[in-house]
Structure formats: structure tokens, C-alpha cells
Image (tube, rainbow over all chains, first blue to last red; front, side, top):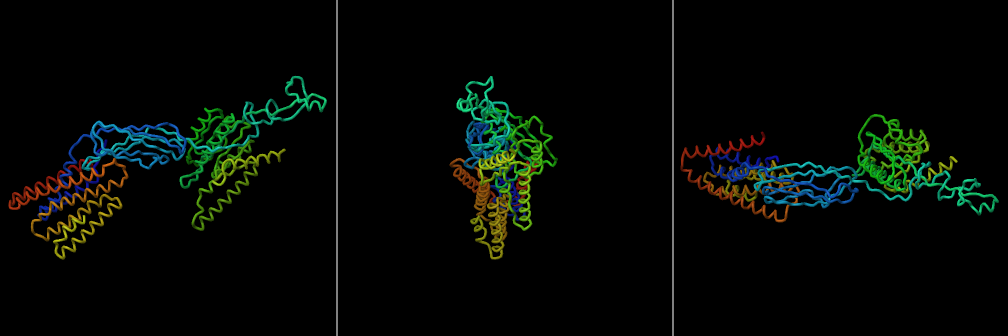
Length: 424
Length: 158
């Protein structure tokens, strides 16, 4: 506990000193009488006293929550000495708010009292939040001295990003060897009908297509497309973040990535993650609920860390980008380093698609002529970039407030289907 | 504050009254600025300006002012209410009944200030006839009080 003088002490000391000096100078005892009550308050308030013994303990209902949901917290206060006024302030990160708006309380406690104060908190944004810091301020009855103490926060709250519902997602061009939910183009055992061929010894009798065999006067068997899993690598751009009014492209990118990861993992696909920016983070492709947990925990650490060094694909370990994997870039397409990396990946033959988190909605066109001109030039540059990516064969789904993620991905599906047909 | 102003100006002459009125206006402006802007340093300034108006009234009126304890209690009440208003700016939710309890405490403190002032007035009235010895005792007491305040302030800053 640190003891400090309140503004009242300084003010009253000035009044007392001035009153007494004026009484001496003007030889008027009435001025000393005016200063006397203030001196009395100071004399009583400044008497030596032991520091109050007060403790506060913060507790959270849970360690994990989805952004936007409520979570309960309590502060337990215990005092060994009587306290006339204890002011308690819950120090919270900017992204966490108290529901009801009040994060500061004042209590009057007798010696040995124990109280519990309950709060309802809400995380406005995904991320890792450190909670539990409490500021205590104790005032004496005369409010002349103040005792202050800060209790450090040691509670970590993981707020997970919200996910949208997606009915259909982008299918990769190639599948892997393990069983999954994606209909492969190869032929083998499965449900989807593929083709018929002549019977060869070793084929199962159940596969014989008797109707076709009767028509051809030769035994023919059905071939089917097997269901295989796929490898998907989510490639998140953390070079730049365009923000406005509490929203940002990085926030939306992480939510989109969490949505896509959940959807692909539900299909028993292997999903990996690369956050490519000032700090490179990666997660080797994996499947199942454990991988989903790892992916989301890695995403929570995503943030923009400024760097001026040039980054390219060569710094990413090769095993993180398996061959035949679908690489889904989630990016605002603002930083040229990420755009160059996408072109590089395409040139290396990766199956690539991009979800563009539209930054235009977060940028103010400007008020002056020069600002508006710069804004129009920037929009033109973005159109040129989109054309360049289309020329390279990279499908781009523009996702903004007017278009939901599902609709944006449908546009990419159509582009990829046409590109496949054109290639055929 | 308005009541204190009336107390100082009601018996003042024309010249002193004008100066006193200006001091009181400045004091009110300082008080309003302190409460609206939250600048606690303006509150003692406001109190000193009203005190200066009272000192001017004493300077002009050569008689012994028996209303001094009343003025002292009023000034203390104004100071307590002013600082309480500044503390309320911090938006700390208090328990039910805390406001009334605090008001009763401030009223009690004001009453105590009035009692102390009255006792000192009686002592000062007795001492008026006392001569140089009493003057020296008074000066010594005032100096001792000032020294205590300075020593404490140095201990706090050290």
C-alpha cells in the first residue's frame, strides 16, 4: 500500500498557511480563526496510522469464451481493518467491457468483512486478454490521505473468433490418399458413379452392371469415384491491417479463417495454417478436433507486427505446404509482399484461391482534392491488381459487408469450374 | 459561497465593496471552473479569493468581527462540498445511503468547525487586552503550525 496526499490536503494546507500569515500581517486574529477548522482537519487527518490491510482476489468463470459472449467474473474482498471508503477499479483491456458499464465500486467495510462483487464481462474482439488487474484506493473519513494499491492481473482469457455458417466450401483440385468427404476424380471404391469398363478377373461380382452387360453381351463393371480427404492450407496475411471504427481487415480475416478451418475439418480434411507477415507462424496440416483447437489457439496470436524486410515463400518450410494442397489466401491485398508471394505460389503450381477481405470499406475517400485523387488512384491500382491475379489464374473472392462469405466463395467456385473446363 | 460573499460585502463601504465584489466574482468563476473542468487546484484559489474579500472587509472595519466563526464554518463547508463534487467526477458507484451518510458527516464537520472557531474567538477576545506577551504567544503558535505543515509536506515529497 502506498500512502499519498489527496488534493484536499494540499488545498487545506494552502488555506491554513495563507490564513495564518494574513492574520500575522494584518494583526487580525479573525483570519486565524478562519484558518483554524482547516488546520484541525489536517491535524486529525495527517496523524500517523498503520496501512489498511485489504486484499482482493479476482476469479473468472472460464478461461475460454467466444467473442461477443458473456462471461462471469468475481472480485472477493477481505479486510482486516475498518475502511471508511474502499474504491475498487477493475482494469480491463480495451477489447473487454463490463456489461452494465460500471467497472468501479465503492464500499464501506468493517474490520474482518468479506465481500464478493460479481461482474459480467464481454470480449468485443477475439484474442488473448490478460485480466485480473485491480486498483484499490482507500480513503480515510476526512479524505485527507489516500492509500493505493494495484493488484497485478494474472488471468488469461482466450476469446475465440466467431464463425459463420458455410454450406459449401471450395473443393481442391486434387485429393489425398486417405478417406474423406471429397469425391475424388480418380476411380475406385466409392458411392459416386464414375464410369463402366469391361470385367477383368479380380473384380467384385457386386460391381457388375448387369443391365449394361446384357446390352453389350460382355460383362462390364461400374467404376466409382472414391471419397478422399484433401489437404488445405489457410494462408493468412498479417503484414497489414486496415482499421476503422472498431473494425479491421485482420479481425475479419481471422474470423473467415476460423470459419473455413472448422468447415474443412468437419469433412475430415487436413488443415494447416500459415500466418505470413512480420512474424511467421505455421501449423502443420492435421485433422480432427485437436487440430481445430491448435488452429484457433494459433490464430489468437495473430497480429500485425511491422517489418520492412522482404519476405517470400522460401522462408516457409516445405512440409507446411504439401503438394496437391489447396492454398487459401485470406488477405486484404494491401501489402505487395503478400501479393508477390501469392504469385510465387501460383507459379510453383499450387492450387490457389484467395479470399479478399475488402479494405475499401475501411478507407475514408478524403476531404481535400489531393486526398480524393489519391483514393481514386488507389482504387485503380486495386483493379489492376485484380486483373493481374486473374491473368495468373488465381481466383479471388471479394468479401465485404454487401456479400457474405458463402456468396463470395460461390464466385470462386464458378471461376475455378470454368477454368477447369477451359483447360479440358 | 454566495452566503460567504454576502457576509463580506454587506457592511463594506463603497470602494472596498467594489474591490470585494470583484474578488468574490473571481472566486465564483474559479469555483465553477474547478467543478466543471475538474481542476482541483482552482478550488483552494477560490477559497483564498473569498478569504481575501473577508480580509479586505476586516481591514476596512476596524472592530472585532464576531462573525468570524460563522465565516470559518461556511468556508469549510464550501471546501468540503467542492472537493466532494470533484471526487464524484470519478464515476465510482457507491453503496445505497452513502450520499446521506457523507452529507451528515460534512454537516458534523462544519458544526465542529463552528465550535472550534467560537472557542478561539472567545480566547482571542480575552487575549486582546493581553498586550505584547499574548502577541508573542500567538505569533509563536502560528509559526509552529506553519512549520508542522511544511515538515509534513517535505516528508510526503521525500
